[in-house]
Image 1: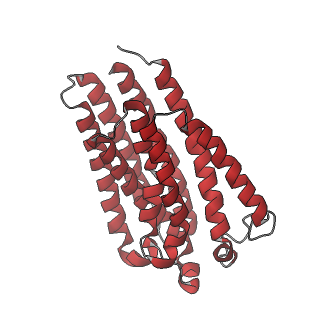
Image 2: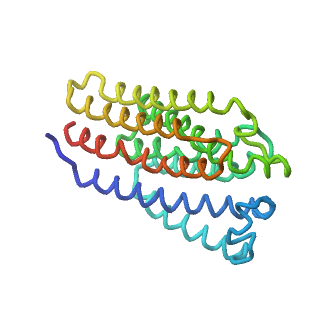
Length: 260
């Protein structure tokens, strides 16, 4: 067993903190740009900005603080990772407006939300290999899955105010699309594991990582069996269950890294 180096520990911790900060900054930017839309939707009109609890100026200051803290972490990485981090800002900036011009805003969310897969791999290896791209694509497919479910909560309000989403686009065909996104997620993540371990000869590490992907797939399949797309409460519960789906592979992948 090779164990973990000090840099690996820093990378894992710093990526987690950086992702938390940039997710917060991105959500703040989304809330700023969507404040008028949120005010017109029953489920979101109580959010801090549309409800008047927080001013736009205050939200902008908070967003900048989060982004600067994240930048402090980013600049400890190599220049490829730094470049990827800066490039991600374009996706973060565009995403909130996607629902205004495309029926596929979930794709833009996936592109922005999973960028960390490329960045972290670059920070670790100094390159973005095929396995990293497959991991990124798997994350995008997963985002399409869970955010389509999330969007089903607001179908009626979105239709009234003209907001586009995959939930409205798919309509009664949504369940079939969700099974497709689920299948794409697991196939792409599994392919990332296969490619990452190709020619390494570490069979136990490979099997352990693949078990993590399988366990995640089992959980998502369980979600789909209990999902009622016509019940907003069910949609929210299943959407939130994806937090657990994302955590399930973590111990498997950590063990595989240790074994590798």
